Length: 121
Image (cartoon, rainbow, N blue to C red; front, side, top):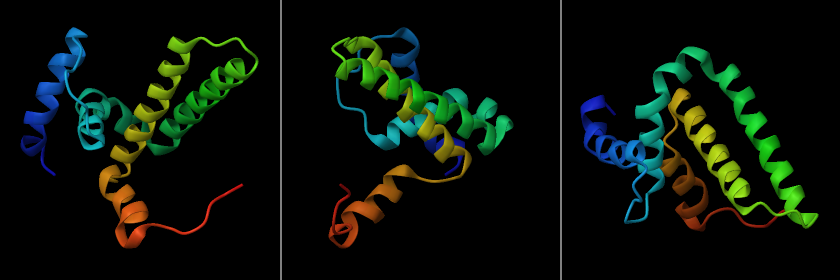
């Protein structure tokens, strides 16, 4: 997808993001991925997938600590939400660098043909 096709969505969301004004509707996964692309792609792409993956793993570790604190009765809901947001944002960054459309990838894996069978325990 070329930059001009992304601009209307990314531009509208960046205004809300930059002003910290609440978004009055649900953001789609596609819109989130485009928001992250518009704001961070140049820096993230220059860093490359391996370096960005290390940042992603660090954020997953921070999320693990926030979840562990919750389980120990030391819930900091704001921090927990922030860490979930960071993990999703860094995952979107990796997908952008690797040219993966997350909406398509998720639909192909979990919706198309009824999705995978089974579960992990």
